[in-house]
Length: 517
Ligand code: KIV
Ligand code: ZN
Picture 1 (cartoon, helix red, strand yellow):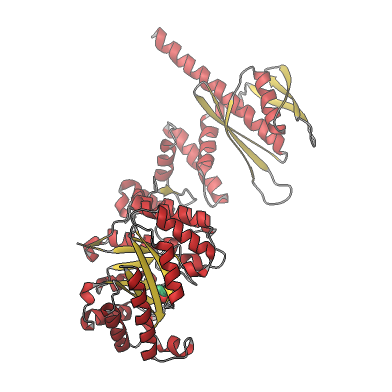
Picture 2 (cartoon, rainbow, N blue to C red):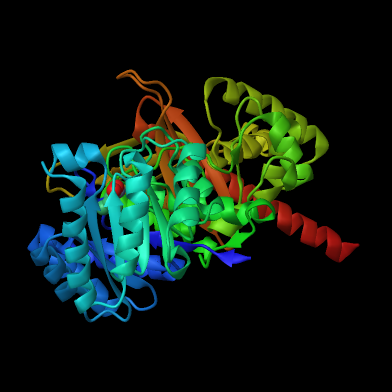
């Protein structure tokens, strides 16, 4: 198997996205993560474009060890000199010179002809080569360049010292068989082509960047230029994660490998998304939130029987710890049972039937059922009898609070026929209520989780509060609802405490029964 070199241009082409500008510190953070990911080359920036970018490329060159550090330059002396000054301290520096080769660009952008354009490119390349031993040359808009002229350009840049020749589909115009033919033509006709690495750089304007890149690899390209999350100019570049996982997953077909440490993929994707402020679409291949989420009941059932039924990539191979079972109205009994036992509940068969019924009625109203919804349903069922014979119930509460005042709550709970009362201060009104309840009950509870959600979207929304409390290794959930969120929270807390008391008592009874047996 041959190696495919991964050239990451997230920090250069990816950073060209409007609004995705990174500061030098953020660029270094991403570069360090790209090195952990195992990319072969990092195109760190375009140093002539701004003093900030120069600084960032220079710091990356000094700090990031492992990958080749590449700086972009137009075929202009000043660009090349600045690029070199930015990367000369890198372990493995490379200057990337680009100059258009298509007639459209030569005539319309440069107002010149093919011969003069080639001379300009060669002169720039020779200058770059006098500074740095590793030079990449890109005939920009190569996919729209006359094939015979492209052969001439590539042959002469190789003769002038290029070590890598990159063939860009700059405007994302190519289609796979035709782009493959561009590479095959070069392989067949260019003298010296086997002495250099052929690279490709595909844009995604027609959604074909990954397909074009893979076709080029089949025809002889050995370096692929790509970005994390497929970011880049306009519709973006070929996505790193798609290329790497396609090559890895279909090695039976491609017969290639990369040196990417694939479990680092998800972390890298999230870091880039966060620092660039570019959310990843949910259905994005490999790194989207839904890429490993199975929602249909038939699929979930298949996955639980054998993952290979509906998964071609193991989530852990890209750094996701588990495949997500998204419970929805279409999830079947098998998926729900699996989730319940995964959450650590041991339920009887008749309890499960009641849970499933309640689950279906909640799922009818909600698109996704989260773990805490399942927990509430399960506890509602298994503690149903207890909730009828409550130990404590909320009679009333009163909170005083205001700007600059410490909130204080007074709470009245009923236990059997007795009314118990206590007050407490707190960090906020809800904290004061919970502390007052603890005083009434006489025990302290650690609040592990607290959430309030609106069930309806109007102003008079019904608030549902969910709490999870811990006491002496016992954990219980409580839920309360009301249009008043303080009341909903107080009810939830009291319910959780009732359930805790019940658990403690049940365990003590079981222990006693065992002792006397
Ligand atoms: O898309 C392109 O042609 C480029 C070059 C600089 C390689 O980004
Ligand atoms: Zn590009």
